[in-house]
Length: 164
Image 1 (cartoon, rainbow, N blue to C red):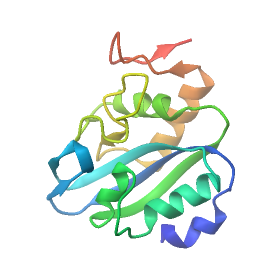
Image 2: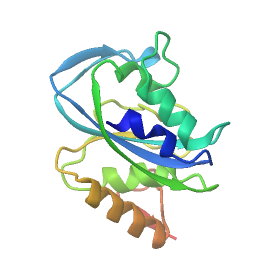
Image 3: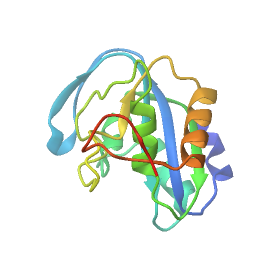
């Protein structure tokens, strides 16, 4: 189980993609985003861990039950079944780039507009992507190749990543 692996995540800053399933349709209130219905399927949340404790602390927070949710993802904890996590130790803020890369793939959709991106300065539609056909290997390869090739976010002009 993923929660048992938390101690193996590094305490450094970085970005992560947490993949999880929702096994039945749910209606859920997501803070100020309101009530949304989420169908069953696979979801991928792109986040950053820039505070104290880095990736380990942030993922531990997301995977523990919370009486008082802080981040959007916390509101889904009751229904999500964590499947895996890809992370990159980095000082660079690649959260938006990862969301852009995943959202541009076939079969990807944004289930809740602004989810995880309410404070995003780059115009991302959301940092939560629904795509039931993505495998961990595909996610790893897409993100690795995208970052290596300098892909960055550019939501204002198109839904296609911009190469810089």
